[in-house]
Length: 66
Image (cartoon, rainbow, N blue to C red; front, side, top):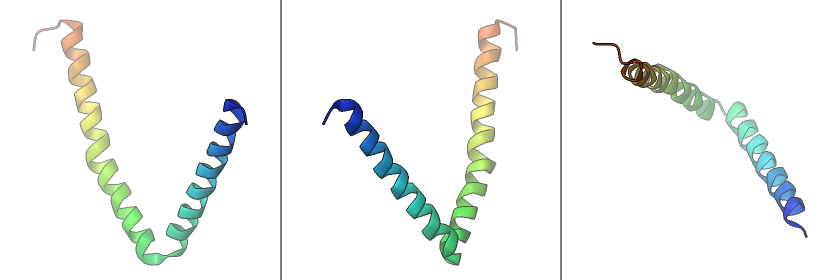
């Protein structure tokens, strides 16, 4: 098996596992609630934190005084 075919096979296996996991999460109410809570936490903390860090980095690189 060539490297390219092995890579395609690995990608197919990973995609199948991802679809199966998503199906289980979406069809199990307790896991669905957990996933929604985790998404809210990530969107509420992770994204604003990243945006603040990038804004600060851009401000410092621009050379403007604080």
